Length: 171
Image 1: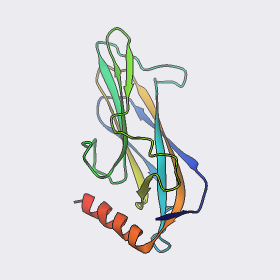
Image 2 (image 1 turned 135 degrees about the vertical axis):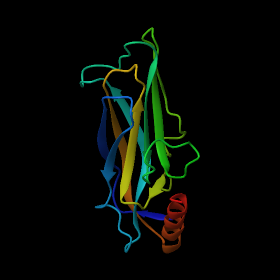
Image 3 (image 1 turned 45 degrees about the vertical axis):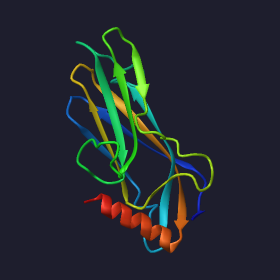
C-alpha cells in the first residue's frame, strides 16, 4: 500500500487557551504532501501534553471541576467534532475536579496506530487542524500536540481512495 520515503519524525504545535471559547492552531503539511507524486503523511501516533499557564505549572481549576479538551483533524470543521467524524485523527481530554484530582483520557482509540510499516493514518491534506477548549473553571492552559509521522508514497488507487474519502468527509 505505502512505500516509506522517510523514517519517523515528530511535528509539534502548542495551543494556548486563555478562555472557555474554542482555540485553534494548525500544523502545515504542505511541504510533505505532494498530490502529483502521490506523497502523503502517515501518522503513527499523536501525543497530548497538558500544562498550565507556564511550562513549570500544572492545570488548575479555581471554582470547581473542569476540563481541557484537544482534537486533531485533517479537515477544518470550525470546532470540536464528534468521534464518528472521519476527519478526526486524535482526541484527548483532561478532567480536573474540585479536590485537585487529575484524570487524562484519550477519547479516540487508538491514538497510537501501531508499529508496523503499514500501520498508521494516511493524510493527504495540506494541514492538520488543532482545536482546544477548556471549561470556565480552569485557569489558562497549554496543550502541546506531538504528531509522530513519516512521509510515504501511495499507489495510485490507494491515494485516490484516501483523497475521495477525505473529500466525501468534507461534505
